[in-house]
Image (cartoon, rainbow, N blue to C red; front, side, top):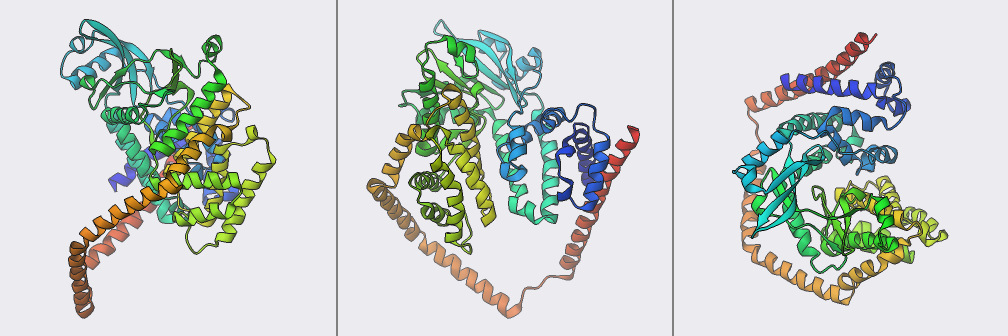
Amino acid sequence: MISALTHAARLARAAFVFAREGVFGVVDPSLVPPPGQLALRMARLIERRGAKSGPRLTRALTRLGPAYLKLGQFLATRPDVIGVAMARDLESLQDRLPPFSQAEAEAVVAAALERPVAQAFASFGPSVAAASIAQVHRGEVEKGGVRKQVAVKVLRPNVASRFRRDLSDFFFVANKAEAHSAEARRLRLVEVINTMSRSVAMEMDLRLEAAALSEMAENTRDDPDFRVPTVDWDRTTHNVLTMEWIEGIALNDHARLAQSQIDLPELGRNVIQSFLRHALRDGFFHADMHPGNLFVDDSGRLVAVDFGIMGRLGLKERRFLAEILLGFITRDYRRVAEVHFEAGYVPGHHSVENFAQAIRAIGEPIHSRTAEEISMAKLLTLLLEVTGLFDMQTRPELILLQKTMVVVEGVARSFDPKLDIWTVADPVVREWITQNLGPLGRVQGALAGAGELGRLLGGLPALASRTVSLIEQFETMAREGLTLGPATIAEIKRAEARSHRWSILALWVIAAALVGLLWTTH
């Protein structure tokens, strides 16, 4: 009871902020049940003046604090959940907050490194950037009498407890929604919040970001046009990440880029090819490649920073991506449809022919346009929209890939508006297809399959033993039946009654709180 009321009180505050910022004004009343339509009308009465202008949801989430900011950023990658229009609104959401004090930052660093800041760093300057989870300071370290500039990322004090509290509210809403809505169950809202929770937990352990940096450094060590900062592991802990300071021009600094001697169209091609190489070749890509996280160094190489959000693709997902791109290029829509069924993404009771027809509706308009008008990201966006009609379960890794591709294409075309995405992507995609789907790939797949078969055969004795034990248990149940004691049955009934009772009470508390807020404003 106390837990439900606590959630209800905090959610009522969030509902009030949404109402004040005009968020409910963009909701179509015809899509809401009659009781909800009344609540929407009440919410519209307390909109503040000027709330109808600008990105309403972005303003509300910023007011609600760090966890809501992260929720907004995460939902911007999930147009399948919140719709394309709202996702585009959230793409402008900036994860920027006022910095915490220098004294607090130095206290965190000293505690994390177990030594005074003056002993760990030759200098430790003020914050140069602050976000919801951490902020970055510019410092210097001395090694062998030589000073080297570093970037020091410091976790916000007490940020973990704040996120735990707000995430528990998000789980409460998702569970209630799935309990009462088939659409919420299809979208797997609890899993959406679970994914966000895991992502935030990884972001709040800066050692994991350091590990991502290290892994990508290994993957790209032979790439001539891309690199990442090196990690100073001696000065990196759960709360502090120390890495190489990057001297370069940020890709959002168009004035400096214009003054430089950099070949901007070539830079755009490098952005596209680097991303696709990481996604297809490595199955590990930077999932937050906005221009502020990308630099060009003195040698002309692309340098990425801020590895808090990363994406992974297994071999199945990479094969899926390569085959659908190839299928659209060759207009083999049936093959594109078959790939979805082979991957298990679309349930088998649907018709391959009908699905191929829907794919054709996406692919044919592409072939009536010039190359620079064709967007690979837009193609994947339309594909994900169509798959919803065929009960395709949400694939978070593919959604993240698609949203990152939208950003990457935008960055590349800002340097060359006539960039031919397909021509630029062709050598990377073709190389991967040749290596993995051609004769060499088939040989490698056969060898991998042989290894899997060997492991399966080695585990057969243990599997047979477990199977015999399971059969014996089923035989016992068949003879004696499955019996629940009276106490167990009574407890199940009481638990169901409590859950139903507190769910209804929580909803009434939210409604009452909203009415109370409405009354106090008039």
